[in-house]
Amino acid sequence: MVNHSRPLSVPEFVALKQAGRKITMLTAYDYPTARALDEAGVDSLLVGDTLGMVVQGRENTLGVRLEDIIYHAEMVSRAAQHALVVADMPFLSYQVSVPEAIANAGRILKETRCQAIKLEGGADQAATISALVGAGIPVMAHVGLRPQNVHQMGGYKVQRDAERLMNDATAAEQAGAFSIVLECIPRELARQITDRLSIPTIGIGAGADCDGQVLVTHDMLGLTSGHVPKFVKQYADLQTIIGDAARQYCQEVRDATFPAEEHGFR
Ligand code: KIV
Image 1 (cartoon, protein in one colour):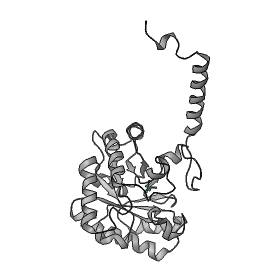
Image 2 (tube, rainbow, N blue to C red):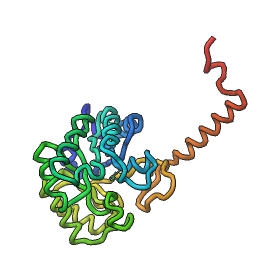
Image 3 (cartoon, rainbow, N blue to C red):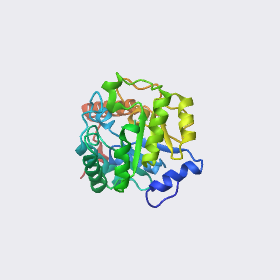
Image 4 (cartoon, rainbow, N blue to C red):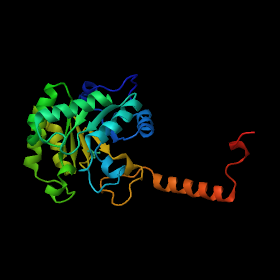
């Protein structure tokens, strides 16, 4: 665990690649979870638009609004004492025009106190990345599987167009992105991109050679109902723990064994 009395800065995050220290990132959407992850020493917390699926119960991320990200990122930023907090730009908050992207990203930084934003795109978003960075807004890019393009991609599939993905990654770096998420691409291609770039690559379904890894916290804690992608390792089974606790509570209320004497007042 890095011993910081303040959150990791963007330059410190980038320096982890040069230091050869693997970077850890997990998603967070609320104060208590963010606090637990932060205290565990996670380097960076991502307020991902996956909140549309794992918190709001939607079928994809497209319905997430800028206000949702601001609402959740504000709670996460308040909890983070050590981790760099990055907030996702939701669908159509940056694709319409560069001025709109700057205004929306600026709102996220001003209203949530997070330190950076993430957007999905590489070469196609280079002008926007460059303008955001020019306005003083650190940008994490995201190439490979881009969930906001789910309809165009025809589903959540492994991305294998090596030339296009390398071009996207290098374009994002040249535009000024400080880091880049590589989602669902073959391990060897992720290794080549990681070797080529001087900014950290953060993999999800991209193998062990990336500079860091990110997972959706609800997936790795066993809180996601339905399909969980192949690249997820489940580190806990919170769905079962919560269900068992709730069943025991119901039983004890029905038996009148809760509340006991010590839970009341005289
Ligand atoms: O929205 C999100 O949580 C993400 C991660 C899956 C990288 O983009």
